[in-house]
Length: 238
Length: 213
Image (cartoon, rainbow over all chains, first blue to last red; front, side, top):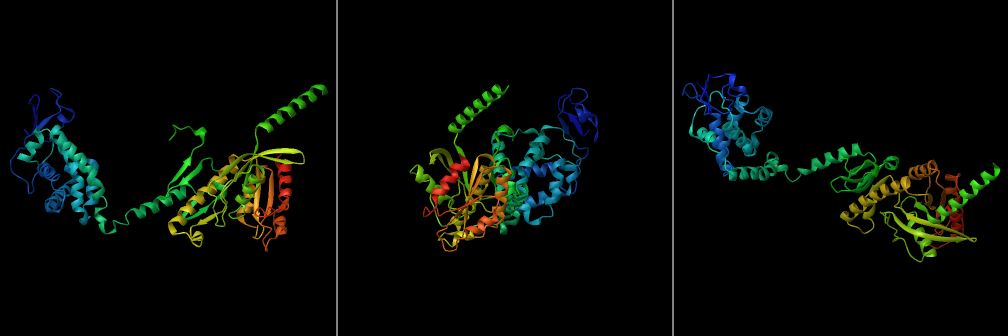
C-alpha cells in the first residue's frame, strides 16, 4: 500500500488514480507514501537529496558545496520528467549543458527546491522510486519556519543578481552593454522619429516628430524616452 | 435681409477684434542652428520690452529649450501688434556631439548637449504642430539655404497655412547672399537684416505688424 490518506487512513495501490482528485472517502488531499519495497534505487531519493540540499544551501552559498550541488543538479537533470514540476523541466534541460553555471545554477534553484519540497510535504506523495529517509520524513512532517521562508525569499533577492551574470563572469563589466544596445534598437524601431546612432549621436526624422501626437520631453542616457502623452488619451491608460 | 447681414458682420468684426486684443498671436522663431534666432528674439524683446529672451552663443544648439517672451507690443505706423515670441531650438536632422568638441567642451558635456539639442528639436517640432500662430523663419544668409531642413520646415509651415516671414540674417558678414535665399523661397518675401547689429530692424518690425497683426 504505497499511498495512505493521512486523514482517514485509506490506502491506495501504487499508481492509483483514485486519489488524484482527493480521497474518495474523506476528501482529504494529504497522502502518505509508503514504498512497496525498501530496496533502494541506484541513486538516492530525489526528495531526500533535494530537501537535504535545500537545508544545506542557504548556509553555503559559496564554492565548498559546489560538488554536492553538482551532484544534485545532475540528479535533477537526469530525471526531470518524473521529479521536476513541469515548468522547471525546460529550465533544467537548458541549464544542464552549461557546465560553468553549475554553482550558480544550484544556488538559483534553492528557492524553487524549497517550494517544491514544501509542496511535497504538504500534498500527495505520488513519487515513484522514492525512498523513505530522515530528510524526507522531516520534509514531510516539519512545517517550514517563518525564518526559513524569510531567508529563502532573501536568497532570491540577493542571489539572483549575483547568479544571473555568473556564467559569463569575464564579460560581467560589459554585461549591460548589449542590453542597452538592444534597448536602443528596440526604441529606434518604435520611435523612428529619433534614431540614436550612438551615445551623443542622433538622427531625427522631422516629419515623424511633427506628425507624432505625443511629445518627446527627454531622452535618457540609457536610450529611454520620456514622452508626454496627449491629454485626450487619459492618464489612467497605460 | 441686407440689414441683418450687415449687423452680423459688424458683430463678427467686434468679437474678432476683442479676441485679437485678448490673445496675442504666438510667433515661433524657427530656423536651423546658428542662424541667429536667439539674437533676433533678444533684439525684438529688448527693443520693445527691455528684457532679453535667452543667452546667445556662437556654439550651435545654445538654445535647447523653447523660450517664450509674452506680450511683446510692437507699434508700427500707428498700429499696435501684441505677440508672444517663442524662440525655438535650431532644427536639424542630425546631432553629433563631436561638433561641440571643438568648442572647448569635454566629451561628457558634448554628449549631454547633443542629447538636449535633440530634445530641443523634438520640442520645436511639437510647438510647430501645436502652438504657433505664425512663423519668423531665420536663415543665415552666408550659408546655402537649399537644405532638407529648410525645405521641409517651410513645407510644413505652408501646409499649415501659417503666416511666415523669411529673414535673411547676418547681412553684416562678408559672405552674405540675400538673393540666394530669395531665390530658394520665391513664394515668400525675404527681408534682409542683421539682428546682431540691428540693421534693417525697422523693416522687420513693419513686416511683423503686417504679417501677424
